[in-house]
Image (cartoon, rainbow, N blue to C red; front, side):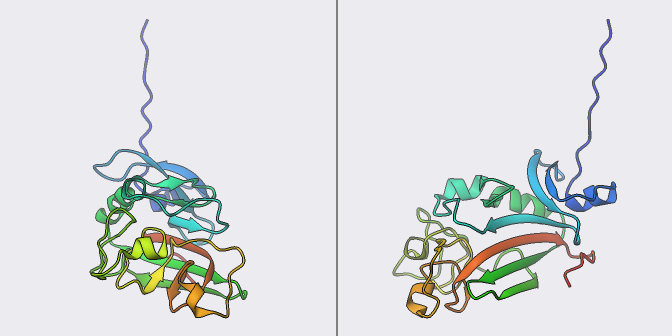
Length: 202
């Protein structure tokens, strides 16, 4: 008796998934060039983007060790970090644009795009691996969460989630997620997309 094996070729990214006719947001298996397959959350209905981070309700602890940040953690349908290894695999196969979507506790929302996939010149730090620019303290230990810290300022989108922040006190804002200033955030989402394609950012 002869058996035939059907080998399905996985797409390399969310954009290729779109080109093949998929039009629904959701979790899909991809296989970037020279890589093992892994799952990602693809946004397809409003431009094609791959979500690499989502922090929205505090259900997932982001104060993780280096190994967890390297491999990824959380639920792709909820809060998660895709993993430094997976992010690197995606960014090395083509030029990508980073989209940062933020909302605060006062109802304001903001989208920033056209950035590189990591703040230029900064190394990623976690509570057990100090790579920031502050020679006195480990910013990840002080602020919580893994991030591309400079001198413990600028931003921390993987910081502690606070359900009832004191939005009037700047001194408490950096104990939570923040972006550029001491402005406390309610949700953060990081997405990447091919830089050469119009993905409907506006």
